[in-house]
Length: 208
Image 1: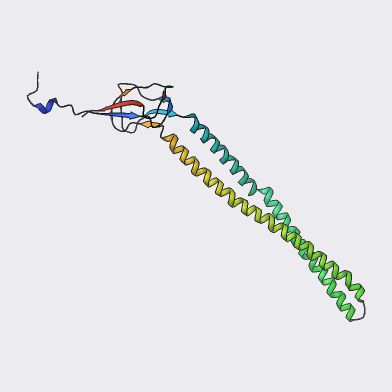
Image 2: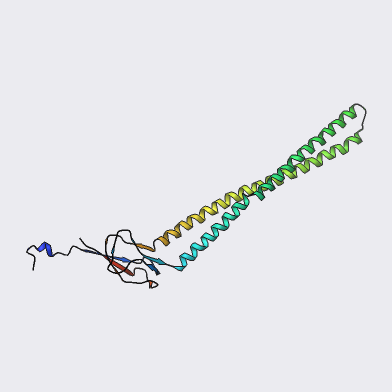
């Protein structure tokens, strides 16, 4: 029977066609033709080996960088720095004692109990111990500076790697195709099928 109201015969359904965002392969199909899907429901998982390989390499690089950072900030380097600090402390004490012996010899010269010949080796010992202290301080500061610089560089590298990983992950996430609206789905491709950029994967009939 034909409706007397012309408006009753108007098709108000909307057909949404979902296309592949890039050349890829259908990794998994989560729905079947004829099913009613909800908005946001996962429909297809696509994959590209290039991006998965790249993401795997980025993760490996990140783990290697974290391992290097952990080593630089770890106990072995800390123990080395502590050892160098101890050497500096010991040489400070040695220089101080040497200087005290030199000064005592000066007093003995003034009192007539020693000669300038007794003072010369004492002065030379102070000079030698001053040089040894300087060497220890330079080595300690160099190692400390290298550690600090390494930490800064490795943290910058790690930050750059994480940003790259986030970018690649967003590209991979684009390959998880979700329903833009509620409706009945009609699938055009199956699992393991290759698809080109813009290939129509499915359509959703959004009826009223």
